[in-house]
Length: 255
Ligand code: PGA
Image 1: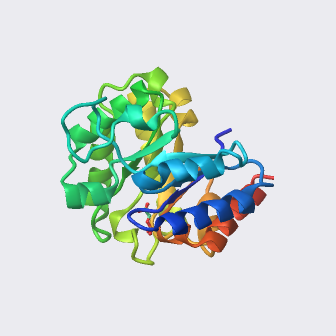
Image 2: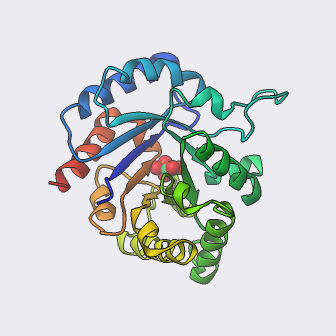
Image 3: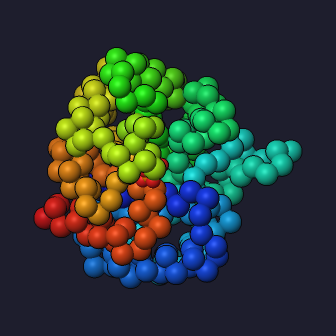
């Protein structure tokens, strides 16, 4: 059984006090839940304050970073290394489309980051998605080209720690999510691709989430699909009540 995961990607939002209030609310709001894993992805500078808050919370509530450099250390002004993250974070988002679009990150670089994260015991949360909604053929090409490239040379025993996210770029921050059925069909094909790259058993152990305009009103449309193992939530993760409701609904559905 793959345990559902709900990630809250705060992106470049929150002041220190916003971050503390939000993390405290989530910690308290999810305390009694079972059967779900919840991961907060605050901006780098709030990782430690949020770490201190959730450390006293339930063990299924953990922390992730939104990005990282692939090297351990060096003269890379402004960058954050896996060594800085590894004792605080269990997860790190890699290959988010905003990194690709605004910071020109390419598959090769993302592949280096994925390898480095796994080497350091961090679980990469790898985002994959197509840019255009209309062209289904191109959509598939984008996603599967990305998938193969970012997982290049990653062995079977390590890949199981990774989490993939199907995030159609046209659905991110637009208020126009994919349909649950369409997302599930893409996730199924991603899993089939993993089965070809590795094997069926390995592919069936890797969690694949959906991301893109997820709200408390539509979460179950995605997680009720057998193939979809949770969600990466952006905008809605900044609203404590709604984010907690998402986590609750998913936990409830596992019963
Ligand atoms: P959104 O973002 O929920 O605001 O669409 C999702 C994401 O970028 O992970």
